[in-house]
Image (tube, one colour):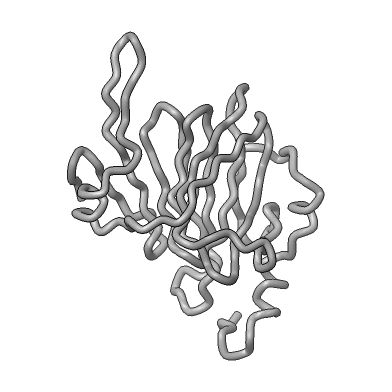
Amino acid sequence: MISGGIKVTPLGLDGVLLVELKIWGDARGFFVERFQLAAFEALGLPTTFVQDNHSRSMPGVLRGLHYQDAPPQGKLVGVVRGRIWDVVVDIRPESPTFGQHAGIELSDMNGRLLWMPPRFAHGFFVLGDEPADILYKVDAPYNPATEAGLYWGDADLSIAWPSERPVVSGRDQRLPSFAQFRAELPAHLRTEE
């Protein structure tokens, strides 16, 4: 679907969308409308956000896979400097794509945003030789008491990260596996093996 120069493509996980923005550029640089209410509404994209976040990470850093339980957050993620490999994992036990993931490169030059609805785990790896600045809008406020995550290198998730030896925080190294996450779900939400 296209509206106002914005193209939207589903990425194979229900509700996860690649949003491609129109970039006007010349030898001086470029201009891009990162959010345009009427175009987002026309495309059925979310338009109600309660917080903007800005994250900077150095080359080779991997952050994630993070999510928030209460309230769950939908995120519109984009990069304003550098490049990242952005990954989302479906953690909705009722979903036919539960445990599956999608990944895509986002950069300051490709005009891409990634929309993930609530109840997806999110992580990224910084590509290239420069830091990456990530801007993302969220549709629910941050609640550190319910922040959680999944182990980024979990073999059950089979995510092909661009590096086998990323720079990862101690906290992210200790996040639970997908099997642990599933085991902690209430019995009526667990899916069959």
